[in-house]
Length: 86
Image 1 (tube, rainbow, N blue to C red):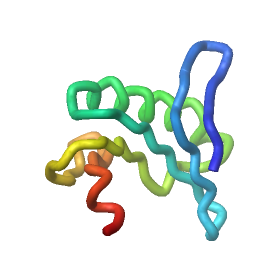
Image 2 (image 1 turned 90 degrees about the vertical axis):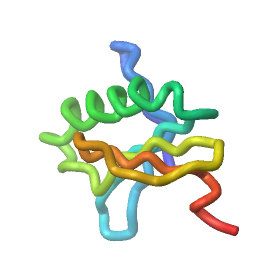
Image 3 (image 1 turned 60 degrees about the horizontal axis):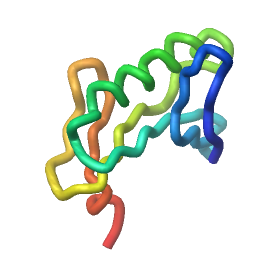
């Protein structure tokens, strides 16, 4: 797991390297009010690096309150943290 930040100010909380060699990106937020901003960062990262390292296996906004998981029309998953485990 890594953190991403570049010289343009683009920052993503977590870059996960998967066992199959793929990668995923996750933004962590305290609630749902910043989901759109977080998804925008994830999509910017995808556009910037996909030609070099391939498309991500998934993009996810992980948030810290109870709620529903869903996938946005742009493909970014929005998931409450309580769905990740007990």
